[in-house]
Every structure is written in structure tokens, then in C-alpha cells.
Length: 215
Image 1 (tube, rainbow, N blue to C red):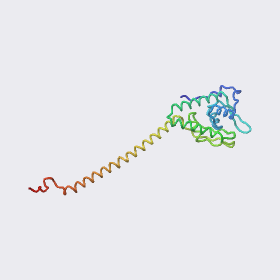
Image 2: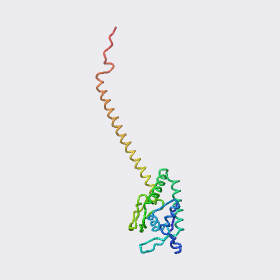
Image 3: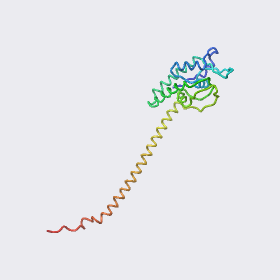
Image 4: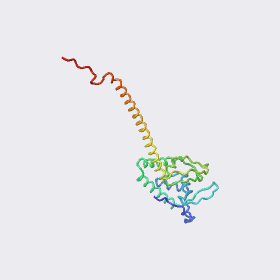
């Protein structure tokens, strides 16, 4: 599925279209059933997922965003969520749903207006990134770079790597068990051979046994 590209919207949109604040954008995401944090909106603006303008105020920097870019981004996120739920194995799809639920619950702890905190992230991995990184935000937050979050392909690779690691562990256990069984079989053969050597003199060959008494 192709990623949405909003990098040119800022250049083509007139200044009059940049009317939404971060709080206004948050309300639109919440109304669409995919609530986000102020920090998430700032990341969308920084990565040009939303068409925005950054302006200086007496309290610091703030973003003004176009409603059209927010609505387009909401539609894209819903499309990605629907495709992910269909394509991923059921345990992964369930985890994706739980992360969205957890992200919604954490919204209540977010307060104040955040300062820009840039992050390199793709839409397919934003929910998981929010779960790991979300903390109650305050107006004293300062900009700081964040490591790149995993993409959708990375999630598939991570699942495959965990599955391969599990299978390798199972093979190692089975190899150990086979080695132990082989060693036990070898010991059993030695014991049987030893018993045969001990019993051979006692039993003797059939022709060496005493003849039965004649009548």
C-alpha cells in the first residue's frame, strides 16, 4: 500500500486555509475514533503528514494546520488500520487493536501545549510507537530527537525472527534429547553385551551340556 504524501500541500495551500490549531486537530481525530496526543500531531506536522505552518508566538512556537490535510490523513489512517486488520495474522491484528485502545486511554493524561518533538515515523507504526513513548506532556517539554520507529515491514520481520528463534530453540532441545537417547542406547548395548559375556560360561554351548540320563 502506498504511503500518503502531503509534503506539497503546504506549498499549494493559501494562508487562509491554515486555521486549525493542534487542539482543533485533536478534536477531529477524536471525533473520527482515532484519538491522538498533541505530540503525535506535532510529529505529523514535522514529517509533513499534515499541511501546516509553524509560527512564533510570545509563548513559543505553534502550528497552524489545514482542515483538508487532517481529514485526508484521518482517511489514510483508517485505510491502513483496515488493511492491517485484514492482512496480518490474527494475533498481530489483535495486538494492533489493543494498542489503539491503550493509546485512547493514555490521551486523558496529556495536558498543556507541547513544543515540537520531531520523530521519523511511518503511519503504519504510529500506534505502536505511541504506546511505547507516550507520557503525560507538560508545557515545559523541550524538543529532542527520537530514534526511528519500526515500519510495517519491520513488524513482519520481527514476527518472523521471533518465530525462527523459537523454532531454533525447539530444534536445539530435540537435538539434545536425541543425543541423550543415543547415549542411553549405547550404554544399554554395553550392558547387554556384558551380561551375555557373563552368562555364556554358565550356559555353555548346547553340545557341551551333560547328556540326559539313559533309561
